[in-house]
Image (cartoon, rainbow, N blue to C red; front, side):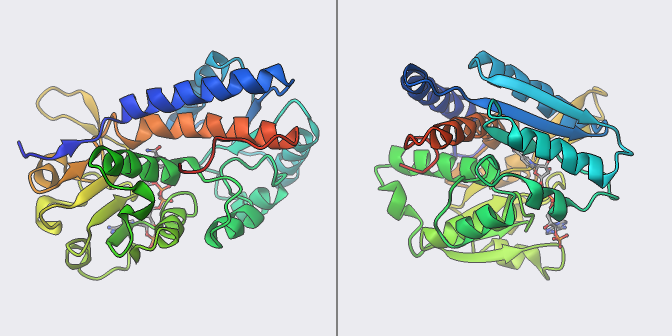
Length: 306
Ligand code: NAP
């Protein structure tokens, strides 16, 4: 066991949820009603589990909620028609396209069909562009959760979270459009020195050892081991991987970071489960609330770091 501070994502998610409830109460008084629509294509196990979970979070806040479940073999024209229907429905204020998409569907084309004002994950090129330029409309939920966790840790140590990353080295492993790239953009916005790693990176450990703050979003269990980090790193683990425990035969959820090995050297670390994951879905419903406010021409409080 190391001495690292283990960042409690469940507690942070609970606080964030309470702040959303407060804002929701005020918005409801002025007639604003958030509604979330998810689009699920096929029967991916993890996507279905996430959909069920989002439904319960959204319904817990008394949002309108609908899931459009399309078959694996759906044609692009039908997906675009579904997105068009949700775009036109004023009861839907936020739309989430659940991943993965079957390979015959061009993801970029579907993203571009979203109404940018309902695109709560900033998947539309306009919203991704605004984020890359440092003027985000919506901050996608998973990278937002990494920075939310980091901010909370910085604050707990007496730092100004908006300045904490300034001049520090942020290494992001993974360059997905939904997590890795937006995490890099957000790091640059905070004046970090950002290093982007991916599957072609040579000697990953040599790069990750440079990190003051490390964000890992890859999908490989325990990819980052203790020897690949320096003393005092702050490690934020996005990965959610199901692995079989060989001694018990049970399925366990593990991250992309080898928790025990990295914790022994880290200043702070997020666990899996109970780290970034629980913050993510709360951030998402917060973005749906922000979208509902914007649609009613009310300035939302939620959605930016503060
Ligand atoms: P993704 O779209 O599959 O992208 C994975 C990235 O990792 C790619 O950029 C890939 O590089 C890179 N990569 C693959 N193998 C690598 C290696 N050996 N060394 C370095 N980089 C490598 O993944 P994602 O959507 O970002 O998700 C990643 C993980 O996070 C998954 O486990 C997923 O379940 C989890 N996740 C969690 C949350 C949450 O709320 N906590 C949300 C979303 C995703 P290339 O670009 O070169 O292929």
